Image (cartoon, rainbow, N blue to C red; front, side):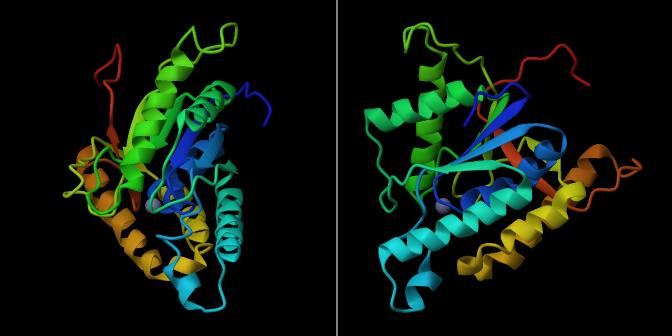
Length: 245
Ligand SMILES: [Zn+2]
């Protein structure tokens, strides 16, 4: 990956499909606005999120990983993002210091204007909060002048948590509703690349419609803005602005 000069965004996904369900709209929307969006999948989700592939029989871990990689690459292509896989394993996902440095180096290469990752809590999935933790820690390392001195450090890109599967149990509450109506077709096409998790296609369509209704309510029902689909995000850090409108 060459150093990016345009506006850019970094999406850190614990498993190879999370970025599609949870942030596919944001990725497609910003790609259509000219952002370079880079997705990092920390693992393929080969153990925990590939049940259908395992049930199909005659499977090996290598075959599951390959299939998950192909699905995720196809989805990223549709959404307009570049994608990389760190293959750290899942259930459990674990990362040593070198891995954290790899992620910090990606931050420095991408120089993201914003970052998307998982919720900080998730009692159903310990890989997801770990991905959020690694993302935040790598961001801080990439900001440090003393890490690989002489390299360009990163600024302070906002970090948003995308929507977990069980928001209430994860203490996740959206404070941003992103209107993804214009790119919903792309997101749904990317969702359909996830052949191993067909049971989630309709579920995440319903989530997008539900968030769309909430977004519409929050722009005012007299607004002429037509919103059909949205994604929810929770800011992990305060935004700095000179305009509160
Ligand atoms: Zn996951």
